[in-house]
Image (cartoon, rainbow, N blue to C red; front, side, top):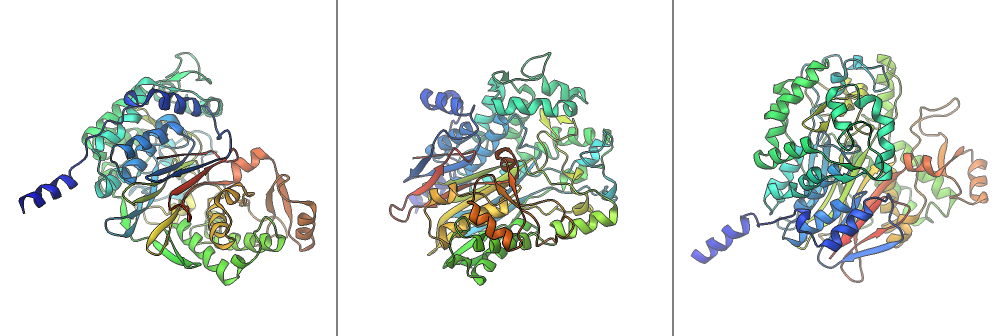
Length: 557
């Protein structure tokens, strides 16, 4: 009995870990830092792991940090947290943020259950006239009104408390190390700064943030960007927990800064923030069960609805959409239809009309993570700044630029009560077959719904191999209001330039489907990008695909 108690105690204790990049294998660290300077993988590369697998967007350094977490006994939750925390540092807080939001779907091998975690935005109790919040395109003024209560750090802590094995503080070590020692500015990040300079220079804190590489100019490719203030904040969170960002020093400074800029944030707003655990939504799809976020999440509902319609319309029995124009026609119309949810373009457009708000394409700068660990756990996670890079407020607190998600979600805020959680459309999914996880997808981008659905259809309906599916032309969502003669369900379809043969396009035109060719740059802006982990039916190992067409990287062991 004594031995049993000792065993049970040991299994619940945190495992000692040191994830600092100072201790990484030098060759692996050097390789990851070199890859960090690129946007896309250099070639097509299947990645397969018998013990564990990671697939994530944009940051090879963050993936390396996640691999170290797994090798030192961490769970999928530990690795996903470590990756997300590191991604924000390597992105310099641009397209993802510690003052952002998070959505998780998780399979726990111990309970054999799936869980959904919503760490989205909370609105302010004191903001009672959301229709009057300035848009992000408006002239500077009342920038604090564009902010919301962030959920990212509370979500990380909630995920770790429920499913983590490593010490909480260890998850921050890679992020702190690169904040203190600096990140080499890539060409992509270097291109971001000139476009956002006008917003960051608006405040002294923004100017201080902007000049963390070179004191007298904005950062350029090749500069070393050191984030000392951020390192201090991360150390405090690692030591005191997420409460530091809500009721602690950072939370108080956030409220002060937002109120100084005309916003309605209060200490009560910060105190009452809670991530929400729930059972995921699910539906059967071709003898499998697909799990997606529940609650107020619109993206999860839309994906499951699309899968049900695909089966009803028997599109799973048709030729793939990129080979048969009739499948493309029907699938595109189906996807347009499911976008018309209670918080999506249909109702939002009506609310904008009632309140005199202009139509804005919601920015979706985000990062996606899929992890499968040695214990059988699987995490599919998306986190987001939910606006343009660094936002437009110029507010910086503790080294963290504060985004402006209320500046384009006035219609959504008008549909909820002050202080409520905003619905979001981040929609990571996990697919189960015979009571085991067989696929996990995390998607980001304007067309994330279409990207997730086409991968599920291509893999399970068309029975295509993962590489073929990942390299197929993306389906692009047309976010513009319908033109004259168009309806919400029948509007111009955007197509990647050169993706389809002339006969394909002629048949669409003959059927009354208008199309518009988009350049490679336009496609990068419009498309959804998914990272995928899938079980290889032949080997039983988890598998991912790197391809030069997608800014997703993978690693395994």
